[in-house]
Length: 430
Ligand code: NAD
Image 1: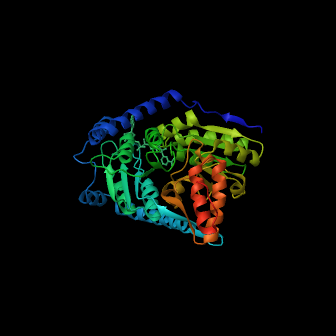
Image 2: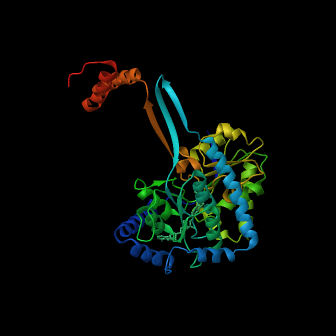
Image 3: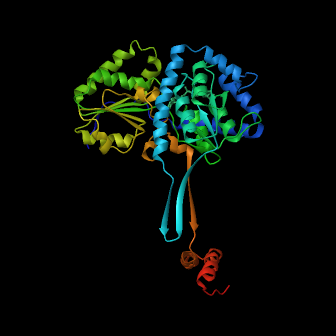
């Protein structure tokens, strides 16, 4: 493959910074494990300058928040949630319990049971990411999770009213105004005032992702959904202004959100670079978007679309947008991505905010081994077995005994012997 960069990233991943984040997170988790609410409050004061009498919102406070949100925003939240719910319900319907009779009288089955208690993290350090409430809380509720606890940080000391409204309409059972590692650790470990959950889902900054990583095992997690990424595959039919606009739509998430373009057209590549610079001149979020573009943006020229797909699979980006003459072919050609956006009439922002697919997606190449958040992540696929036929039980007993003794498991073997004796009158020597 001959791939040629006409714009390279200004930075490479900084392992010193990652180590620093990891150390901070480790300390916060340690202290919350030891001191519960006291440590939660102290870290909320330290990192967010936030220490209300209670982090949990009362029903009255929730209604006050809702009353401050413009009517159009409430209507939009409800419409976006309708789309997310409809898609999640279709996902739920696609997951089937089943039972087979693997041989006469031997039944094997599978059930999908919801997790009992889930924590939903809704990011809010920089922007009130209220759409994450639809994605985490609603999806859990469609899966059948009984208790969903939502945590979201204040934004510059202010209550994010629209996020609270979205969390409430999505069906959160409790809402806490708490952010970062302290929120993740409090939900994972439980404190005097915050219930311990079994599972935490939701995106977040490197502190949130690292906290989930360190606590995984004590709790389940959805995936490591770190800083947003976008990769666009474009051919000569793509409109460079659209390419530039869509790259920057994701670069504005933060200063570390990689926007990548892989194109078969050098002209599209060069024009995109020009348009990015032009759009950044008066984009209100240019500081973040421009930093991401400068430090992590790449434009790569390849000889064919097959090469573009192959390279895109190596990047394994969170969002992959296909701006080519025949975008659907990417469904067959690509394997590694969080979500695919096919053609110019859709875009990553639709998925982020309202189209109905889940926007909590794998980053940092996790798309190689997982998809994004969906109903199935809130379900435990559990198996069972029943043998109702005596002869079958005795025969499986003989097989089990031989298999067990091949592994030197005498105790296991005797469970098989016992049944072979009982149902087939085999003799046994122990
Ligand atoms: P956030 O809610 O994730 O983080 C804010 C919290 O970080 C604060 O409450 C604070 O406690 C903590 N924090 C900040 N600086 C700290 C420090 N120096 N030490 C310890 N803790 C500190 O909100 P955010 O920062 O705006 O980040 C949201 C992230 O979510 C963005 O990176 C965005 O790209 C990402 N995102 C990812 C997806 C996905 O599916 N992958 C989806 C949406 C958003």
